[in-house]
Image 1 (cartoon, rainbow, N blue to C red):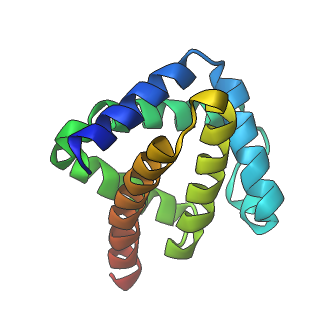
Image 2 (cartoon, rainbow, N blue to C red; image 1 turned 60 degrees about the vertical axis):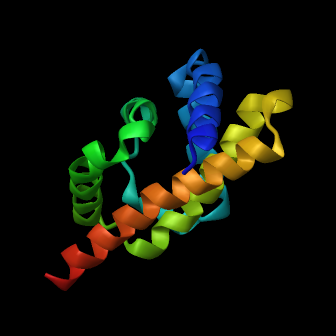
Image 3 (tube, one colour; image 1 turned 180 degrees about the horizontal axis):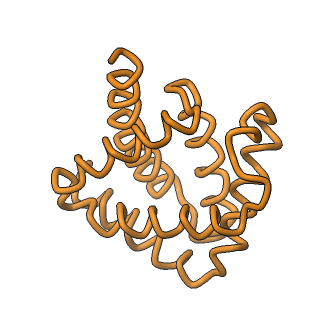
Length: 140
């Protein structure tokens, strides 16, 4: 990611952080389960804590995008935990799609082609690393 893209992601995320995490999480997971209903079984029945975890994880990762190498071990560990929950590498693209959709709705008029590109690159970078770690976990 370029410095400009990192700045765009971090700035746009600051705009969304002012929203209720339950609302953002609900919009994201509703979209994910609407477009990929088969993924619903990977999550708990009550999603409130999941909404908070999603936002906390995004806060953590996005705040460190300019030092991404420092969180590589965290990304690997998260991917392995998700593997234990039944998440497979092919589940990551629908998550990226749902998150981009959620971000676009959440940012409204502040969403732009440059922000979309920055978020897409960011999410692909993160999920590619997690997919690699998950494949390693499945191979072990």
